[in-house]
Image 1 (cartoon, rainbow, N blue to C red):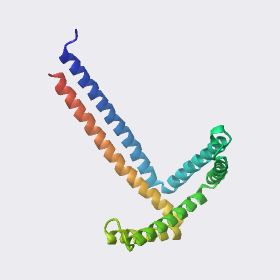
Image 2 (image 1 turned 45 degrees about the vertical axis):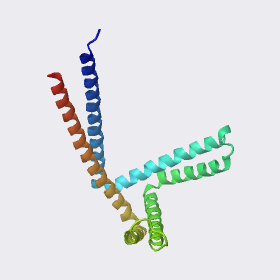
Image 3 (image 1 turned 45 degrees about the horizontal axis):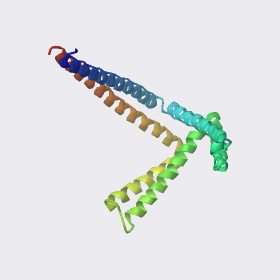
Image 4 (image 1 turned 90 degrees about the horizontal axis):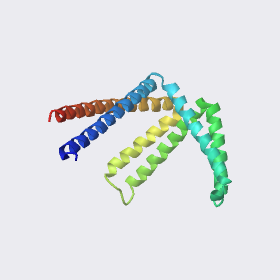
Length: 199
């Protein structure tokens, strides 16, 4: 018969091993995020092109899958929509893959239009009969969205590079946070294992 203390100790060490592995995963993902952030900050144009190409590959695969689904028995009720979505996805994916620079500018335009529409909605909400939250904060955010959208449309190339730089800074900060958290978790787990082994 196994003593209860021995069984409890084994379960504690198993849990601590799991915590250590979680810390290792955090460290690994943090390092990857830091590398991506560094690349995005040093080579922002290449980062934009890479992200656009990834999106193009996704659109192409999604379009092909939509066409396949359209001719399956389960896709019969929505066959028309699936065919249209499939064709659009394939065309968009091919255009992006063969002309990534122009596609990056087009995406910046789309983002700029979205920002302007978002800002207009914010202003309408701020001056409407019912405003969820502070009216002046909602109005200010609406104005900032509109300004950002105009800047994106006026300078789509620079805006695309700006997005890459922003993503780089975000990834760098998040990676450093994950790295520090992972190291702290591993150190705490090691200390707990050391104190547990002396008991």
